[in-house]
Image (cartoon, rainbow, N blue to C red; front, side, top):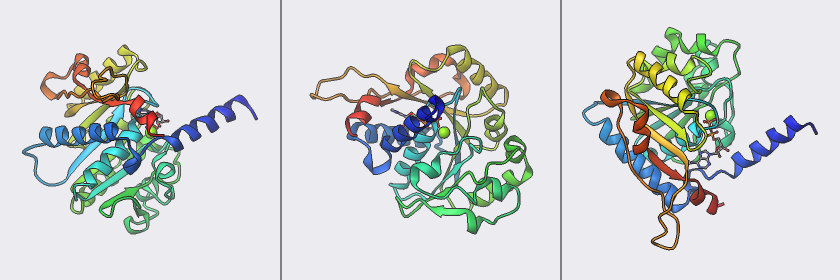
Length: 265
Ligand SMILES: Nc1ncnc2c1ncn2[C@@H]1O[C@H](COP(=O)(O)OP(=O)(O)O)[C@@H](O)[C@H]1O
Ligand SMILES: [Mg+2]
C-alpha cells in the first residue's frame, strides 16, 4: 500500500472514531451546548430561520465536526435543523453520519434532482435533516455562486429553524466567500497550534471585505488545565465579531477539549 493510501486510511479511521452527536463526552457536549447558547445570543433579534456558515482558514481544522455537533445540539432543543455539506470538493458529512452522498447539493444546484430526492433524515434526531454534497462537480464555485443557491436557501428557510452550512476553508478556494454573503452569520473554526496566524488574518480580512457577519470563533483541539474535579474540563469563553472583528478575538473563542473527546473513545 502506498504512503498516500496509508495516510488516507489512517485519516478515515480517525474520523470514524471521532466522537459525534450522542457519543460525545460530557465536557465536549457541554462545550457544544455553550456554543449553542452563545450563538442564540448573538443572533438575538433576528426573526425566522437562521442560516449559519461554518468555515476556517485552512483544511482539517474541525469544520465538519463542528457543523455536525452544532446541528445535533440545536436539534436536541426541538428546533428543525438542516445541515448542508457545502464542501463539494471534500465531502465528509455523509460518511460521518452514514448517509448517501448523492443526490445532494451539487445535483440540486445543477437542476438534475429535486429537494425531495436529495434531502435525508439524519438518522440521529427526528427534526434534523441533511443535504449531502452530491456528485463531485467540476465547478463547485460556479454552482455555489449561482442564483439557484440563493433560491435553494430561500426555499429551505421556510421549513427549518436553522440551516448549518459546512463550507470549505477560505484561504484555499473562493467557495466559502461566495456563499458567506447569503448567510445570517459565519462561525470561524480555529484549530489550536495549527492555523497559521497570517492565513487566519487573511481569511478574516476577506470576510470583513465581504461585509459578512462574523458570529464568533470555535477553537478546536484546545488544551485545558482545569483539573479541579479530577478530570479535565473545557475552558469556555466566547467572542463576537462583527464590529470588533479582529484576529485577537480568537482569545475569547469557544473551546473544545480534544483530550476530553479522546478520553471518551
Ligand atoms: N474539537 C476536536 N477535537 C479533537 N479532534 C477533532 C476536533 N474537531 C475535529 N477533530 C478531528 O480532526 C479531523 C478533521 O476534522 P474535520 O471536522 O473533518 O475538519 P475540516 O472539516 O475542517 O476539514 C477529524 O479527524 C476530526 O475527527
Ligand atoms: Mg470538512
